[in-house]
Length: 83
Image (cartoon, rainbow, N blue to C red; front, side, top):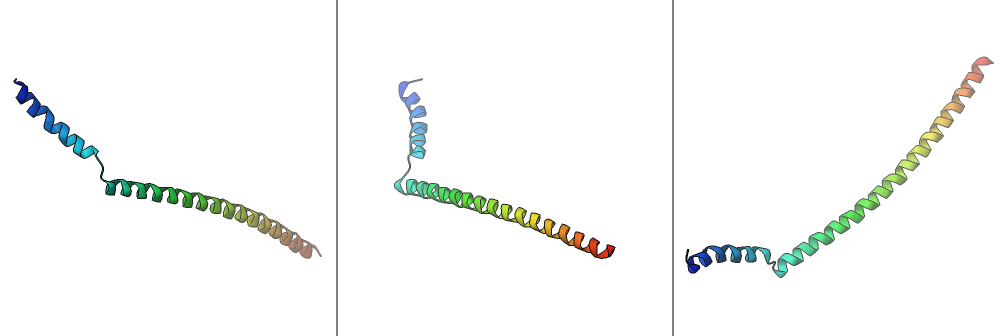
């Protein structure tokens, strides 16, 4: 193959690849915005997880209180039946 034919086969794909890899300022701004939005969503998810953990702890405490109250009521009822 001649040198010109070889260059004509190699250069266009390289130029196309270079055009695809370069980002415009608008594209970069969009990527930065998406990254910031993702970080904000991550922080919100962490806050939601912490709130859920607090709610779980409160629910478990309420369950223990209800169980204790139920047992006390059962004992009182059993005493009233014995009298």
